[in-house]
Image (cartoon, rainbow, N blue to C red):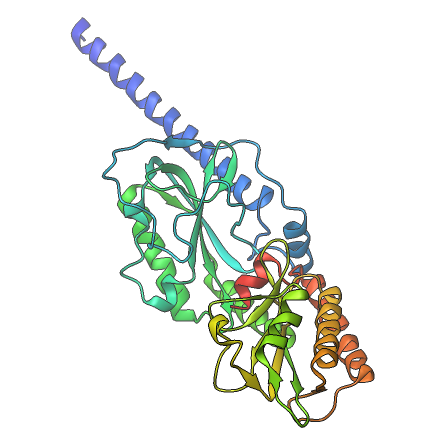
Amino acid sequence: MSEFQLGLLGIGVTVVIAVMAFNKWQEIRYRRASELSFKSDHADLLLESDAQAANAVAQEAPAQDGPHVLDANPDADAPSLSGKAGQGARSRTDTSRLSGAIDLVALLEAPLGLSAEHLDTSGLSREIARRISFEALSEGVWVAPLENTRYQSLNVGFQLVDRQGPVSGPDLESFAAWLSAIAGRCGARAAPLDLGAAHQEARMLDKFCGDVDIQIAVHVVAGNAPFPGTRIRAIAEAAGLGMEADGKFRRRDEDGREIFSLANEGETAFQAELMRELTTASLVLEFDVARSPGGNHSFTKFRQFAEHLASGLGGRIVDDNRASLDGSGFDAIAKELAAIHQAMATRGILPGSADALRLFS
């Protein structure tokens, strides 16, 4: 064999070894990122029990290492994430995340990076697209994807349940097919999904939601004379409620989450410019058990305001059947709510939490 042939053989061996080494490195890096995603930052929906999922959500901690952002300043013409998915592009400082308690989460790994064009959900039905959201691995931390940024690792979440019900088997299959198509187009690897287990989990989660999804309404009704709008507004605002665009007064916490609301039970919603002329014979106060933060403490605020409003207007509190509701009635409701709040805590989904606000929407 000539020296030239020996040289070519040596080059060929070197190339083969280099390719094998690169593939092994890719495999190890993918495994690390997958473990980072589903062990350090999420309760695994398909592998953990309800109690483990609840514990993982409660003790969620950011990952310590992993792939970084590929390019923080790509071409200005790169497509935007806005409007492409359920949550769209979110601020880097937004700490909302996918949750193994309510999402089917799949990891996408792409050495060349994923851009918005790969995440287009426009070809999916609205029912499927509205349930999809994303988070990206940046400097070892899972964050909301930024516009005009490419990432090597993305978690794609498919919300299993909301107030419209659980996902269907065909919808899960459509999601998986869409995800597989994305991976194929961009040369990414997608973590395998157990759709059967996800469908079963969705049905179980939907049953849980049905058991705790309660909205309480009490009414303050007038006696001989209707309530004047100016007096309603004065009492509401003094108690920390504010009038909002939909014509309801709301009491919110420091994070802007609704505790309870007050509305006119007549045909006319509250309007700031018309409160002087408004009179009404009935008001309704509403308390959304699963969405109101603070549990029993928030219900106490709801009760106290209802009693204060009735006293200040000279009205009386009644239920939906127009039967009088006194202190013992509120006590009975509070006892029932304590059991519901405990069930939610056991599941790891607290009233008013990010998971609860998504589930009960």
